[in-house]
Length: 52
Image 1 (tube, rainbow, N blue to C red):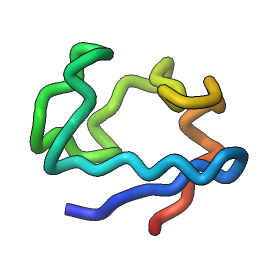
Image 2: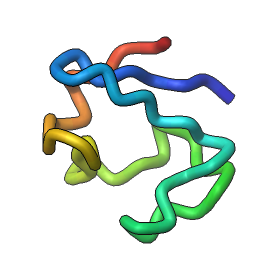
Image 3: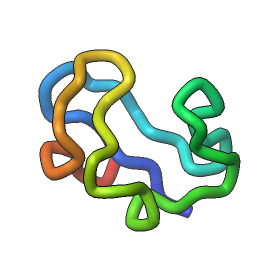
C-alpha cells in the first residue's frame, strides 16, 4: 500500500488509515479513491498527488 503526498501542502494520504472523516475506509488504495476526492488539508485535486 503506497502513500501519496499532496504537491501543494505536503499532506500524505495513508491508505492504511484511510480518511474516516471523509467516509474513506482504512485500507483504501489511492487509486481506488473517487476522482472527486480532494486533499483534506488544502482541497487540492487528486491529480496533484504523487507517490511518497
